[in-house]
Length: 401
Ligand SMILES: [Zn+2]
Image (tube, rainbow, N blue to C red; front, side, top):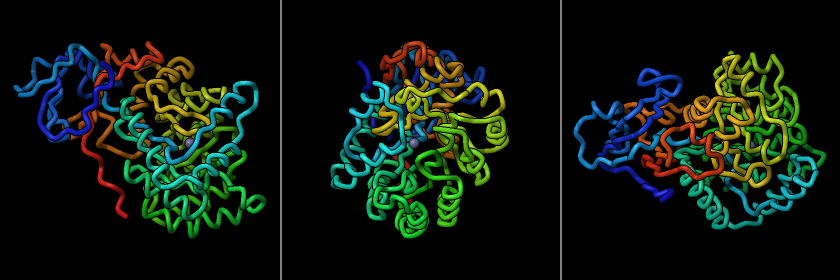
């Protein structure tokens, strides 16, 4: 049976007979992933209370026998766009028939989102959140960006903050049709009245800094205004072409520079020497039939990589972190260990969280088991739903409004 789902952890219990446990803590086990064979984990009131070899485990009532399955921290999806209406399957089909990807397709989703009711947007968001949980994602970020009016952006963030504390204001996604030819007027709105209305519902601020969207100066204006309003920056950078986005992200100490598909040596050096995480989104390259980012070069230079779904109706309509792991291994030359680390601990770092993405005493008990003996199977068995069970701590408190 797949995907049995335990929504809340409110009692004390032990997971025993774990074939292979990924802790992401090299002091607890072997290698980058801190692997412990034949392991046990004790969970108490939604937190990890004990981790180690089964033979050393304290006596616990309510032990759950994992029968040799692999156990990992829940996936952390640090980049998604989940508040929208409609889909763009026709555009995907056209693109697969030879049309190139352009940022302008976002406007179609904007039109559908504006005309949707709050209830319709919330229902679609809850559907996707449930899909993420079934895929083993225990923390996810989501952005606004399909409203592009003060009212529609703040409504998107208000609806999003019901399902995650990791909410991102992306008023600067594209210039909406009604501001055609007046991009600076739109930037003023995004950095002014729209920000004032959105900041209470957001933790992060983001800009799509690329061809067809916003340039570096416009992005800087928006991000600096967001910082002044108490938000922390992250940035869509260097997805479609070379440019100054990555350098801007590092300059502003953004939590993450996302996409990073077109990087030169200076970009890689800047990321490697910073606390800005390079968030790679191979679902976007997969779904737009584009070249993948050079993960190997980033890793060899010492940069930190997160993998995320970029779930959105235009360029990556998937909630599968397991697919991201498989693509990263097969097409981006990451090792299975590196890819699994980036999908868990890397995502936590991209959200600047210390309480998730690892299994250690005191961490949130966000834990998944696989119908497989090892995490390697996530890449080795692409397209197969391997998620066995998901345990998740009670939700993080909402962003203070
Ligand atoms: Zn995105």
